[in-house]
Length: 220
Image (cartoon, rainbow, N blue to C red; front, side, top):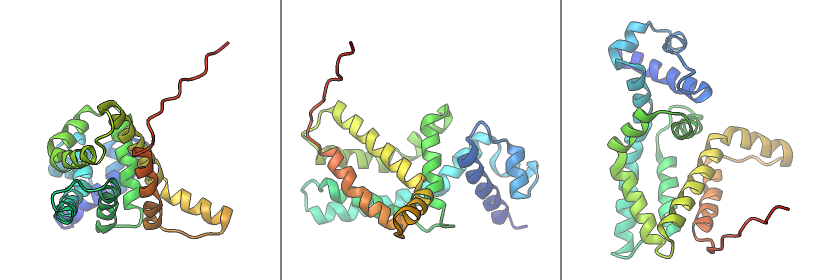
C-alpha cells in the first residue's frame, strides 16, 4: 500500500468516525479497524491522536484558506478601495466552499459537523492549532465583516457572528437530512449549492437586523 494511500485511508476513516462519534469517543483502534491499517501506521504517519485530529482539519482548511484568500483578493480589487458589502463577503465565503474539490458528496457536511464539535467538545489543543495555523485568512474575514458593519458595537457583532456560524454549521452539517426532508414533505429536489444560495441572504439580513433587544417578560 502506497504511503499516500495509507494516509488518505486513515484520514478518511478518522473524519467519518470523529463526525459520527466525537473526538473523545473515537479510539485509534476504531480508526485503524475502519481504515484497515495497523496502529503502527497511525503512529508512524501522525504520532498521536491529537496530531491526527489536526491533520483531519488541515486537509480541508489548508486548501480552503488558499481559495478564500483568492476570493477576498478578487473582492477587494472589485471594490476599488471601498469596503466590500456584507452580501459580497458572505458570497465569497460560500463560493469558496463550493469551489473546493470534494473527495465525496458528503465532504462539506462532515467537515461542518467536525467544526461544530471543535466548539462544543473540550479540545483546547485543536482550538490552539486552528488559531495558530489559520488566523490570517479568518482574521481577514473578521476584518472585512467589521468594515461592512460599522454600525454594530463589538458585542453585537460578536453575537451576530456566533449566530451566523451556528446557523451555518447546523444547516450545512445537516444538509443530507434537510434535502431528504424537503423532498419527502414538499416533493422538491435541491442541492448543497442551492442551500448555500438560500442561506447567504438570510445570514446577511441577520447581521444587518435592527438593533432592538427585547427584554424577557417578568415572571409572576
